[in-house]
Length: 129
Image 1: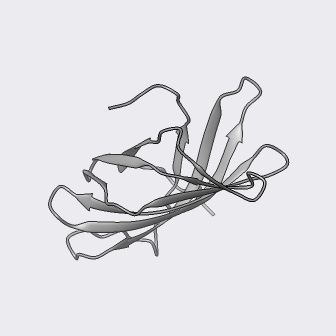
Image 2 (image 1 turned 90 degrees about the vertical axis):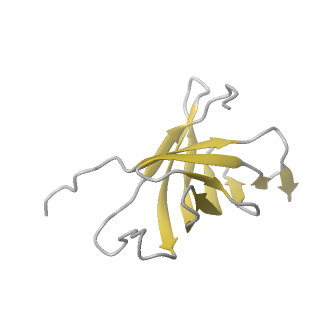
């Protein structure tokens, strides 16, 4: 089997504030956020998206995010992300998720039958606009 080639498609800049909803003994965390998409597609998050995290004993957080993106041309895409946030020894964090897409237009084709999509990022405390 040949190793898949990765090709840049778009970037997502996620912003969240310190506000959180904690359930249980801080085990389940709901994180409000906004986001901006840029690259081959451009847009912003629509209201009602949710990022739900579960703190594990080993310091890793499971993440499950569901949100809709309104593209600049008025089309919409639903994204469901499942993955993990890892905290490194220096205190920095990074995440890796595997997204699933639903596109509601023939103009936007998110081919999930023959392509694998991967999101990865670094958590930053800087304020992005």
